[in-house]
Length: 543
Image 1 (cartoon, rainbow, N blue to C red):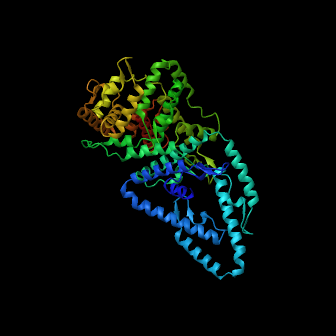
Image 2 (cartoon, rainbow, N blue to C red):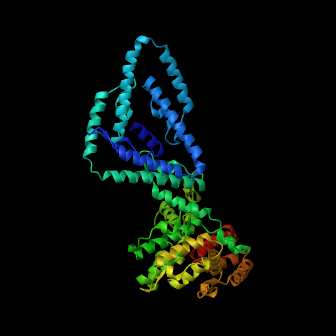
Image 3 (spheres, one colour):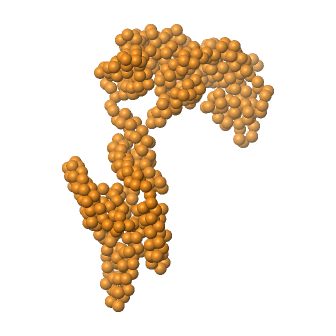
């Protein structure tokens, strides 16, 4: 039985002695042991032939190491398996094991023959201590070798070990038999986790076992492992081959320069509103934010928010907007510099303390702080004015867009003829995946439309997207975008009056005295250009 169990353990490390040996009756389940061994042998034989040499070599190395360790333990009971075996890499220090065994052999040969009986008795006690501890560890994983073995006297507390083992046997016998399936399930979970980790490491060599396995609790983060594997699989899919995108002029660079923190803040506001409007939907940040790419699914978030707005029938009245704007009028006299900066940091996360506070003189630039806070208040009031809720996207339009990306998609996959209802959640999820796998198709059209809308608010999606065919007029969209960008480029310059006029359009509360000094007849051109840049970024983010 011991030989059968040893062979089975080599094939399936998840099994243990207690699975087949009954301590109370002191008997083995030979039939079950032979049956499981036969299954494991067949599974090992069915494994890919390319893996057999390495597996056989590893098995032989492990078997040889176990034999060397057993002999060394007989000669030196103080050694342990952890001295030569690394659990993380699952490898043996064969060289060190052989070296220590050779030294122990020489010491044993040089010892007087009269000491042999005492040594044999000590060796037998050490062997019994190891056996009792091994069985106790199977029943109670909280015990350790140091609880029963004294390194200074090199002796075992056999009496205490036997007592604790007897208690653990009784506790195990009283446990409900339902614990056995859970054990098998745990073994299957470990095997699944190892397979997932192996595949993930093939796709992303930077990950390690320690990222997902907790040694203290001896448990895997299966959910996180599966999530990261899914992301790595998507990243490994080669992008669809499409026509090269036309070169983007100045407006494209403006959009690329837009503040990521502003985009993130806008997305957080939209998500907060969505959760407030429909708390039962269970929306979460993970539904719209990709940790791997650190990007928001702004289109999907906007669509779901539009549906929630339409369902809730919410619309902010003009009176609320007016009151909100009035409350944001400059009030520079209320509060010290710390309070002013705290408010500015809320409105503009890019603001930093060192921009207004001099550590050397311990002085605040109150004038500059109040000036920038006034601008941020005005722009925030303009940005936060409620926009008309976008029209809800019809399921037919979503399906047409998905079919344009995945032609083999069938309507019956999302539409139930019997109930006449669409599976909107599944349709949106599959469309989102399709768009991520083909980032040069629909996504590029959406980006170009967003840029064009920022330059010319009169345009709409209906001008370039055919809902019947689910296709974009990319040529017309690109041509109009180029014209708008060219016109915007021509209108730019370094003339202060021109820059002030552009800023006044974006931030109506702007005045000339904010940037022009009557006494010196000098313009604060740098400040004017910076505030204009910030206003344009906010307009692009809002679009």
